[in-house]
Image 1 (cartoon, rainbow, N blue to C red):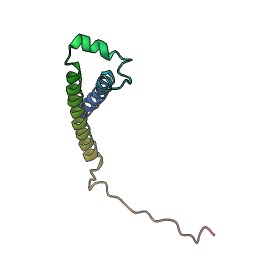
Image 2 (image 1 turned 30 degrees about the vertical axis):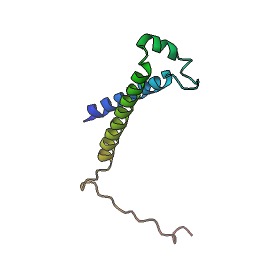
Image 3 (image 1 turned 90 degrees about the vertical axis):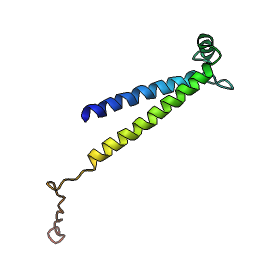
Image 4 (image 1 turned 60 degrees about the vertical axis):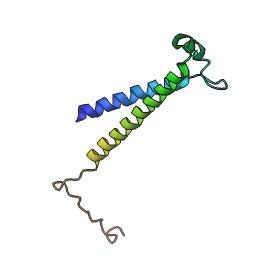
Length: 101
């Protein structure tokens, strides 16, 4: 189970970095950071459909990121919230205020 959690964390980081990269290289409608990362060169390499390819990639990566995050939350919240009967919570008494005066 620990291996699966580590694998999901690795996938989370890789998808996050790829999603950021794909969003930054998209050609903006009115300038922005896309021009500084070579958005025009990407259209030359991928053709006229470069914008639709990047939009599809953004949607796919965003979906993977969302589902992976949900799985990570479910896995970590179930493990952390389990209380066993062998380790009961006990209430400790506070010292009385009479001895302090």
